[in-house]
Structure formats: C-alpha cells, structure tokens
Length: 456
Image (cartoon, rainbow, N blue to C red; front, side, top):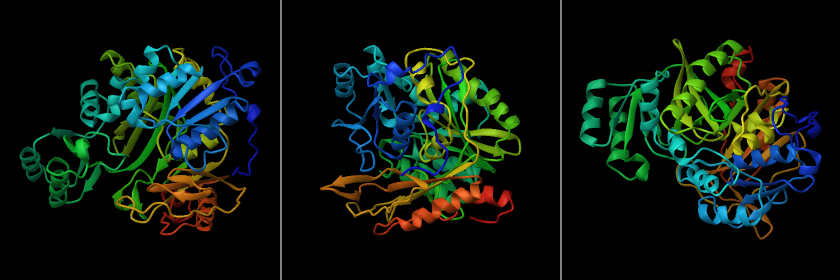
C-alpha cells in the first residue's frame, strides 16, 4: 500500500558531494542489501531502501507477512550471527542493515566488521548504551550529559530501603533489554516496591531485571531524535513523538509503542541545536573517549523539562514505531549515509531533505498486549491507496495472513497536518480486521491540542 503523495524515487539524493553516490550502474542489480530483523521497523527500512535503490537486490531474515514479495527471504534468524556473516560473505552482500537491538547487543557488528563486511550498526561495546541502562546512566553522569538523577541496585533489600527513603513518584527500569517494556512509572512507593520486587526478586523480566535503575520522575513531553553517526559527526533526523502507554490518554502499562507522529512543533530549530550541542555530540564524543566508538544510529529519547531537554534513554538502533513516521517523510536518500557509515566513511557536512507535511502511525495490537496474547488469527487488510501499512507481527500461513506477535501492524498516513494524518491513520486502522484488535484512537493528541484542534 502506497501513500497518495508526490513521492518520486528519483529525488532521493543526499545533498553532499563527498559521499559516494549510489550510481545507476551500481543499482542495476549489483548492490545487494540484507536487512536483519522482521518487524515493523524493518519493514519501513525495507520500504525506504527500495525507494532509494529500486534496482538493488534486497534480502531480509525470516520476513513477516508484509515483506514477502519485496525482498528475498533468508531462512536465518536475526540472532544467528555466525551463520548470517557466512551467508553475507558467500552471497557477496554489499551492505547489512541491522534493525533490532538484540543482535547488536550480541555483537553482530563485531563479527561482520572483523570479516571485512559492511554493516550498519554499532559494535557490542557501543551497543551497551542500550543493553545496559546502568552503563548509559553512568556515561551521562561522567560526561555531564543532562539526564534524571538515579541510583543502580542489584540487591532487593537495598532497593527497597532506598525507595522508602526517597519516596515517589519515581521510575523503575530493568537495566537490560526488555523489548521496550522494562520501564515502570510509579506514582506511589507501594507501586515502586512492587516493581523492584518483580525485577530483582522475580522472573518477570528475566536477566534484564537482574539490575535495576531507579530514577527521578521527570515532568514534560517526550521527544525521539534519531541521529546517524560515523563515530565523530552526527546527522540528526526529523524528531518524532511516540505513545508508550497501551491506553488512550497515556494510561495503562508501557509497551513497545502504540503509535507515533512527526514532526513535533515543540522541536524548534533552536531546541534541536541545543539537543545536538548538549546531548548528541557529547554522547558520541564520550563513547569514543571511553573506547567504545559508536557508528550507526543513535536514538535519543528525551524529556523536554522546564530546565531543558534531558535524556530518558538511549537506543542503539532505529526506534519502533517512530521509524514508520520518520522514513516516509525523508525525501533524500537514507541508503547513501548508511552505506557511507557502514563502509567506515565520513558524513561530515551532509544534510537531509524532508517532505513537507506530517505523518502519523497507529499500531494495531493483539488482545492482551503487552501481556499474553493469542496468535494465528486471520488478518484482513482492505485496499487503501492512501496509507502505508507496515507489518510487525504477521506471517504467511498457507497463503493466509495471520497474526504472530503483540504488535501486528503500523498504519501510517501522510497529510498536510498532524491532525489530518492522525485522522487518516485512525480511519484506515478501523477498516483493518482481526479478532481482538486493539489500538489507540488518540495518536498525536498533544500536538493536535497545541494546534487548537482538541483531542484526536
């Protein structure tokens, strides 16, 4: 499904002559690109890279139901690092783009780079900026990068004693990877005690909860900023805002993300200049100084507080579902800077071009998500040329499209305003059907209210 806008793949150019261009001779079937991962983020990456290089050969690991036909399937899981490196080498793949965090945390970029293979994504030591919240918080503390006050605990009695003394509200985070769900905002001490007991004393988060970060509750709006980086320079992308809570009005438990929109009016040029000066560049410099050079995509989740932007978290890869609204608005090439970074080159002086207007995506989730949910349920997606439907938790089962995950689809619409994009996305989401479908109908509500349009 393709959005009804004036997209022209021939305009997808990065305006910087120092970067190696993807020439017609290269894209005439000779550039081979592997995307590792098979969720909504990877579907969006596949969609964008196909637009950037229409004649390239694209491959994807164990594709979901929406990716089939767009790329050649590779029957290897994203975590089969050694096998993937061997497959890439044997098949002459020019570029591997790693979508999810788990393979990066396991060292996929190290294995590829050590074999001389071009891979987009940070090495294991750099990916620890996401895989260990305690490391990330310590890095920010050591280098003066603005973030919430925090304490780290690996013993339950110590965490309980601290909470009784510190009071609430606080935020309790599993230090390790928890698929975006290891964060609990606690309004009371009782809620915080329950959260640390589930993490340190239980098995709700597995090894991710073996260490917890308890941090100051920050007030404000969140902002997601992606930055392409070669380890020295940064190229910030269009900021977005996502909706983490499962329920409308930001209620219920945290999820991997129930929707997003871009652009965000709070992200003025002055604010973005401050984010780059106070957060992005100092973080990349700090990683290099500590012997963990970061090359790839740095995701900064920010809280816009009264004292300025402060870091909520860092991720070592594109966010989901923010990618599903940022990439459809990117007019210039994503492939060119990604390939340059993967090859060890520089993006100094590069800039990106953006489409006018706005994008909003509504995530359709399975009943019960973010808890237990059913799978294998038939999915019906009517023809709708006005939206992009990025698949996340779907699979092809004997010619039928069925659910296979908690987040099933991300329905993205583009329009002149966030309000219009959200309305189109919501209407398209209503028309898609599978048993138990749940989704939020208020995507972009803060932005719409700022524009004088009330709630979505």
